[in-house]
Amino acid sequence: MSKRLGAASAALLSLLVSMLVSMTVAPSPANAAVGLRVSGARIVEANGNAFVMRGVSHAHTWYAGQTGAFAHIKALRANTVRVVLSGGRWTANGAADVANVVSLCRQNRLICVLENHDTTGYGEQSGAYTLDQAVDYWNSVKSALTGTEDFIVVNIGNEPYGNNNVSAWTSATTSAITRMRSLGFQHLLMVDAPNWGQDWQFTMRDNAQTVFDADPQGNTVFSVHMYGVFDTAAEITAYLDAFRTAGLPLVIGEFGHNHSDGNPDEDTIMAQAVSRGLGYIGWSWSGNGGGVEYLDMVTNFDPASLTSWGQRIFNGANGIAATSREATFFGGGGTDTTAPTTPGAPSASAVTSTGATLTWTASTDAGGSGLAGYDVYREQGSTDPLIGSSTTNSVTLTGLTPATQYQVYVRARDGAGNQSGASATATFTTTTGGGNGGCTAAGTVQSQWGSGYVVQPVTVTNSGTSGITGWTVTFTLPAGHTLAGSWNATLTTSGQTVTARNAGYNGTVAAGGNTSFGFQVNRPGGNTATVSSYTCAAS
Image (cartoon, rainbow, N blue to C red; front, side, top):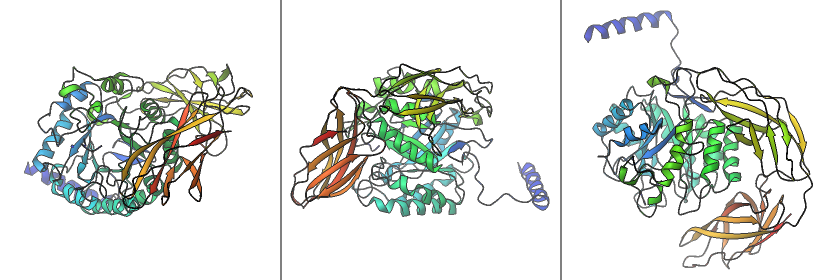
C-alpha cells in the first residue's frame, strides 16, 4: 500500500566452549536458517512451533513520533506489526531509529515485519527505488538488526513493481535475496508481489519456486496484497490454492475492506487465512491519506476510537482477537505439537442443486492452543480442494454444481496450526435444480495511461433464478486496441471481438451471486477510448 495515499570472562568462556564443540561435533550447515524460518509451507519459530501472523501495518516512516502505536496494537491482541520504513524516498529511518523500532517490538512482545516502502510502484510511479537500492538500505541499518532473527522479519521491498515490465520481478527479486544472504542477513525474508502487490498477472505465483530456490537458506516467504483484484471468493481461493499445491509459504501481507480499485472480499480473505493457517496483516493502523482514509483502523492514532474497519479486523469473525497467538519466543502459549482428535464422519442434509448442510461429531484438543475450527474437503484424487470451513461442527456449503456427486471429509485444526486426521467420508448428490439461468456483465476501468488501461473487475452476475455452471462474456475492443493480458478467465480474440470464458474455478455462480475477471489493453498513444459494453451468456 503506498501512502497515495514504515564481560570479558564470559566471552572467553564462550570462545573456549565453541572451540571445543567445533573439534568434537560436526558443524551445522552453512545455509541453516536461524530464528523464524520456513518449514514446508509454514513459518515456525526456532523451537519448531508454528507461528501464524495476525497483525496490522503501522506507517512509522511518516509518523515516527507515534511510538505508542506498538503497545496499542498489542493491546488489541495482535501478534505482528508490519512497520513502514524508508531509506530516502521519504524521510530516511537510519540505524538508530530502526534500533528503537526493534526495541519497541521486543518490549511489546510483537513479531515485527520491517518493510522498505521506497520500492512501491517501481517502473510506474516516479521516484520509486529498485530492489537493489532496497538491499543497500538494509545493509546500512544491519547493525540494528543483528541477532534479532527470532522476532524480526525483513520485507525487502514493498510492492516492488507497478504494472509495467513486471517480468523483471523474478530476476530482481532473486538477486535481492542472494545479496541479502551474501551480506550476512540470517532473517526470514519476505518478498512482495508485483502489480502493486496484487500479482494479477501471476508473475509471483508462476515463478515462486524459482525465487524460493534462489535462497541458499530456503527461508523466504511470499506476500500477496489483496485489494480490488481479490473481490470474489473464487479469486481468493484460487490464488491461495496455487501456493498450497506448490507447497510454498505465503502470507497475505496487506488487505483492506475497501479500495479505490474495487471492493475486496475481506470476509473470505480472513476466513480462508484462518482455515489454512496462513498469516494476514491488514492495512493499516492510522494516518492514511490520498483518498484512502477509510483504511484507518483507528481515528487519529486513538486506540479507543476504532473505525468500522478496525472493529472488523480486530473483533470480527476470524479476526485478530479470536485467532492471534503470541509467539512462544516471548513466552506465549508454550509449544503445541499435538493435533486435535479426528472429527466424526459428516452427515449431509438440506441438499439442494447448489448447496448442502454438513454436521459431524466435534473434535477435542489437548495441546494447549485450543480448537480453532474445521475444514471440509472434497475427495477427488491427488489434490482435494477445500470447499468449506467452520468454527463449529456444522457448515452450510454453497456454490456447488447441480446434479453432481460429492464425496467429502472433515479435518479439525488448532490454534498452533496442527491439523487432525481426516474423518470418514460422506457422499451426497446435489439435485438437478430448475428455473432459468442468465447473466449480466459490467466492467470498471481500474487504471489507464497514455498507451493502455486495465479493466478490473468485469463483474459477472447470475441474474437468473437458479445456479449456473458456466458463463461467456463478449466485448469489442476499440479500433487499434490489442489485448495485453487477462486473469480469472480464458480470453480469445477474433479481429476486435473478444470472448471471455470462465476459468475452471469460477464458472459456478449461485442465483444472485457474482464472480469477476479482468484484462489489460494496449492502445495507440493519444487514444483515450476504452471498452464500454459487454454481453453475457450463461450455461
